[in-house]
Image (cartoon, rainbow, N blue to C red; front, side, top):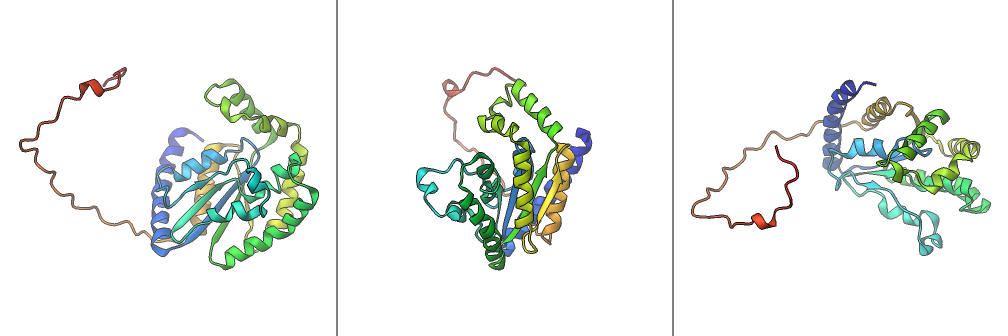
Amino acid sequence: MKRKRYEKRLRTYEAELAKLQGWIKAEGLRVVVIFEGRDAAGKGGTIKTISRRLNPRVVPTVALGVPTDREKGQWYLQRYVPHLPGPGEMVLFDRSWYNRLGVEKVMGFCTDEQYEDFLRLCPAFEQVIVEDGIILIKYWLHVSDDEQERRFQRRNTDPRRRWKLSPMDLEARSRWVEYSKARDAMFEHTSTEWAPWHVNDMNDKRSGRLNLIAHLLDQIPYEDLTPAPLELPDRQPQGDYVAPDWQDLLIPQTYSD
């Protein structure tokens, strides 16, 4: 998709996302949006596109790091539960409890018993939180093997993107089929009536982001509660106030108009 067309449509969707945010806050809704997918599928960029014009207090992003030794000894879902939304919040999970059914399974970070237990537990856990009133929306961002390879090569040669290429990403390259099988099993066991998976094609990032945002907006009926423009008070007159000379505090002005 051409950038000009993408940005024009995105501006419209950003306004709608702001309306959705206002509705969620006003109605005290609790929303969880999960983003999963292969490495370089565009999860981070999509989440930033959704949230960049929104209030992070209303729409926070959760991207948990490697579990600590203490967390490894806890009930697996214990580290995720505190991040579930309170009234008036929509939490965006950049990866989630599905790490157990993807990365941990393929990389051997959990035992077969832990994997099988969570495969059975996950639908029940999601049913409990949905029945409690949480709106749960799950996205799998799909990218083809050819497109993922292209993005990996770009990350490898672009200093601005090099940090995105982790040792885990490199290891995953050799386990493409194993990841596919893990994804297939995940869909089979956890795409339920109360929490279905939604697959979004991300081979073109721009159209993929727009398609996902359009779908997200359709999942939650909302109304426009945007208030009318405020009447701003006059600024206080300066009077006899004289600002001190703080030129010595300025950073070097490398650039100017």
